[in-house]
Image (cartoon, rainbow over all chains, first blue to last red; front, side, top):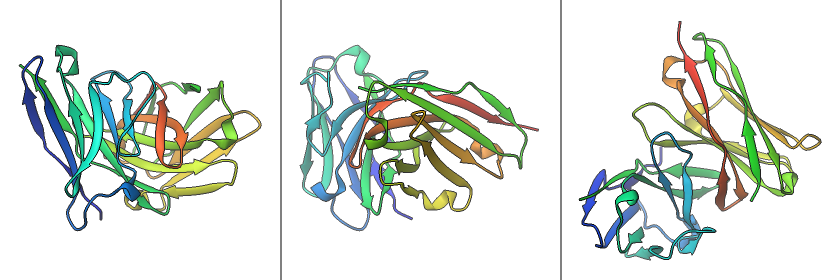
Length: 110
Length: 117
């Protein structure tokens, strides 16, 4: 079974920058995995932030950016704000119509 | 962006089945890729499966093999996800999503399914 790994938790200071990553245990993440990133606050539907590794979804502030760094997908949040504090998930396309989500990163802004 | 309305919360007995609906408006239903994602209490997001109505292609997570069926009615713009042989671990919020084969663009509001005896 494919396992997508994310940092369980990270913290960032208000106004600071943080990078969340998303990887695979056996192979490098590449653009062919179409990495995407989602923001999820409790009690709300998730929100798509980034798709295709670096394309921002509609209405997403430019504080959020996606990339591939080394063998992992990355989501960078700049000028962090208090309401950025929530869970972030990546998802990777594994081919044949199959997607796998990472375990999520709980981001604390303090 | 497509607008979606999901069916209301349900309580089910272990071993029974549930069929969740997701009605879409504001877009070209058949051309979308519709993914189903769930989140159990205290757990992360889990991709369940998808359908591309215009070509009738479906796929699903191996962990749900044999228990999940995803369908779509192009005439009414409604997608369905049926899960059988329910267990307590299937208690979750179930989301329908719309997008392309390679990304999720919009999310439904979610629908709580509780499996309890």
